[in-house]
Every structure is written in structure tokens, then in C-alpha cells.
Amino acid sequence: MSGHKNTGILISFVLAVGLLSASFTAVLMTSHYNRAQFQLLNGICRSIIDELPEAETVIPAILKDYKNKTAVPEEKSILATYGYRQSDFSKAAPNYGIIFAAAGFLFGGGLFLAAFRHMRRKEMLRIKSLTDYLENVNTGGNGLHLREEEDEFSKLQDEIYKTVTFAYQTRDAALTARQNFAENLANIAHQLKTPITAIHLSLQMMDCPSGKENISQIRRQLERLTHLEEALLLLSRLDAGTLPFEKKEADVFTILTLAADNLQEVLSHAGVSVDIPEGKPARITVDMDWTMEAIMNLLKNCMEHTPAGGVIHCSYEQNPLYTQIIIRDEGEGFAKEDLPHLFERFFRGQNAKSGGIGIGLSLAKELIESQNGTIHAKNNPDSGACFEIRFYSH
Image (tube, rainbow, N blue to C red; front, top):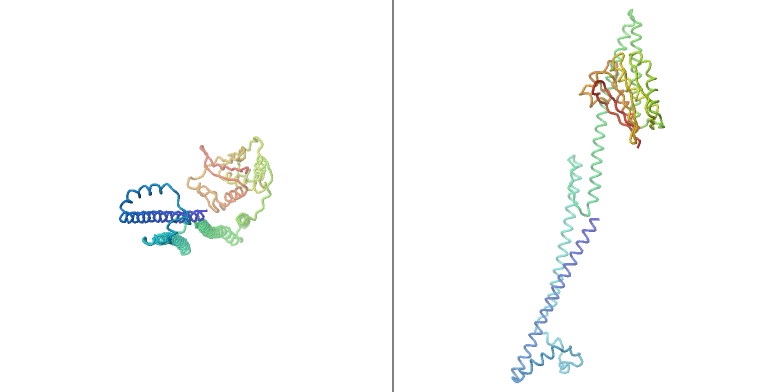
């Protein structure tokens, strides 16, 4: 749009200059010929008076009378009867009309060429600036800054800027993914090293009187490896976007109750109970099984930090925008410096219990966020940790 606008302005400018030049030339030519005719008539009158002095009193009256009359037709012209033509009386004045016309044409043409050259030079400078910008990007320079201009190249500039910005974002995402991949491999290797070492030590002690205890230790380590393998497989499917979610409308109270029931054995062993008061009906559209898996991970985390005899409190409420679920415990809460990292994979906070692998909260977060939800962790004002989950309606 700006290119057509600039072209229209240029054409209008050239036409205006051309019309001004033509008008100026016409004024000069009219003034020149009027002066030439006046001088010719003045010379004729002077010559008549010199030859006939008595005509001095007659000529002014004739001129005044002639001024009020229309022009005499060519066939009735007295000069024509004497064999004179109009061109015979213009020889005394040089033919400046052609000169003026040529000057106007040259001036207008020169101005047009100057405007065209200026426009062409401006286009070349814009092309050069965009080329330098792309060269700077290709050589690894800072290519995100591009001076904005409104001309026929504006759309091209916008598209180049979008492409470069997307390329930078893609590159940053690839570097971040590569770094995360390396960190995950290191974490996995570290997590596998501990149970494998324990298994080797237990096997070496099988011949001791405490062999049964070693067998139990091997079983626990194998269960830990199995849990780690299942969690890593689930996370990899979430990362690849291949985990199927069968979303259906489900009751929030039912999800919380079933999640607590599935953990009843470990909760009883830890001496911790779960309080889920039934409130107003609240329904969310989620995959019930995977949502229960996320809730169970949060309940297990609260259980590990709740002293024996303590209670894990669950509550929920619904409004037109989202359904909120609150899960809080009666433990010591999160360390302040751990809060920004709680949902990172393999992160273990200062108050983490032994035997964990630091993947439960990360898994819960990804399962919830994959179903149009959010989760935040904070400390209660009095004591204990709190998880705030929101499933949005749209």
C-alpha cells in the first residue's frame, strides 16, 4: 500500500511541476508577444506622425475606437489586400516561444529524471540495508534490530523480520532442548547408578547370614528401577505429544476420592489421613486416569512431608472460568529457595525424603498442563505446603 502511495505522490509531484512549468512558459510568452505587439504598433504610429504631423490628433481617437472593436476577419484585412501576412510583422521580435517551450520541456524532463534517480537511489539503499541485515544474521550477528520504514519494501521487511525472529526462536529452542536432553541423560545415569550399586553390594553379601535382608533390598531397588523406567517412559511420551488423553466430563470429588483410595495402603502405613469434604458439584473435562495419576503424585508428596497422625486437606470450587483444586499438608512446607525449582525433573529439595527420584511433581505438572490446566506450589501462611490446581473451561 505504501509503495502505491509513494508512486502516486511522485507522479503527482511531476505533473504539478510540469503544469507549473507550462503555465510559467505561457505567461512569459504572452507577456513577450504583448510587449512586441505594443512596440510594433508604437513604431508604426510614430512613423505615421513623422510623415504626417497632422495625424497626431487623429491616431489616438482611432486607437481608442479600435480598442473597443472586435478583430477584423482575415479576408477583410487591409494589410492582406496590400499583400502583407501576420508573420511579416513578427520578424522584428526573435521567436522566443520555441526557446521558452524548449526550456520548460528541459526543466520538466530534468526534474522528472532527478526525481526518478532519487527514487531509484532510495530503492537501492533499501535493498542494500536489507541485504546487509541478512548478511549480519547469517554471520551470527545481532539480527533482531531492524529500523522500520514506510515504503514499498515495508511488507518485505516485515516478512524478513518475522522469519529471522522465528529462526532465532527455533535456534534457542533447539539449544534449550539439547541442553535439557544432556541434563536428563546425566540425571538418568545418576538415578540408575544408585540402585545398581545397591544391587551389586547385596549380591556380594548373599552368602552372609543376612541374605534374606539383602534379597529384600534387591527387590526394593528393582521396584525403584521399574518405577523410574515407567516414569521416564511416560515423560518421553508427554514430550513427544504421543500420550493419548481420553477426555470426558468427570466429577472432581470422585477423582480426589479415587486417588486417595488408591494410596490408602501407603497412607495407612505412614499414619496420614486425607480429608476431602464434599462441596458443591464440580465437573471438569479431563482424562480421569491420568488426572488421578497427577493427584496421586501430589498426595504422595504431601504424605512424605506430613508427620504421623497428620492430615492432608483437599478442597475444590468452581466458577465460570476455571475449577480450582487445593491440596495442602501439615508438614514443614517448602524451603524458600526450592520454590522456583519444585517442578523441575529430578529436582530434590532440602526437605526431600530419601528414596525418591525427584520426578513425581514434574510428571504431575505436565499431566495437568497437557489438559488445559495450571499448577502452582506455595507455603501456607500458618504451616505446610500447598498445591493450587486450576482446570480452565476454555
